[in-house]
Image 1 (cartoon, rainbow, N blue to C red):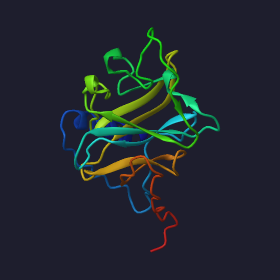
Image 2: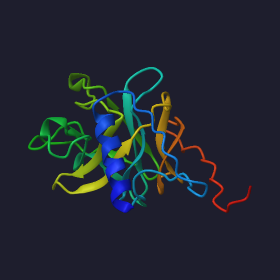
Image 3: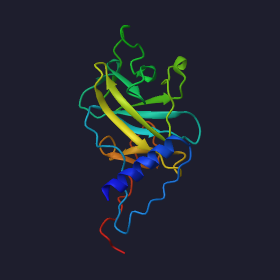
Image 4: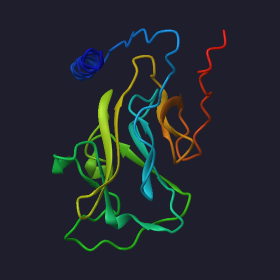
Length: 193
């Protein structure tokens, strides 16, 4: 049974990579609860929200400093593809070997990275797809935080955001660019009818 579910998931991911519109209609049964995407946050600088299909404007990624100290943005990149160096965006603005003046993201602050493939304007050199990924990478090449996601066909204008803010997995919510993510109602898993 697990093999069938894995093959279905792989088929849906492959199908979604080939088209902009994929409707996910999978019957999970009576007791299947909705689940978030991605893993819980572990690092100091995390992907907190992604907006791959905004109602207007460009795609964006929201980063969040969840640590107890300011973070120097010169030490990090954001990318949508770990194996494509031309998709790495240096958060400090001056990638190595150039000198990067210290640029701090204070405790609890957000940073919005515009992902519209317009590098000359200071934006990330990629756009976000409906089946895509986002990564925060250190100068040494370590993936600090990562999200591989499948954006639902009915999600236009909504974002995938961590619940709770800065900590949990990603859920489809009203966009909250640069602010605390809105709460997502917890699905009833107790079987009450």
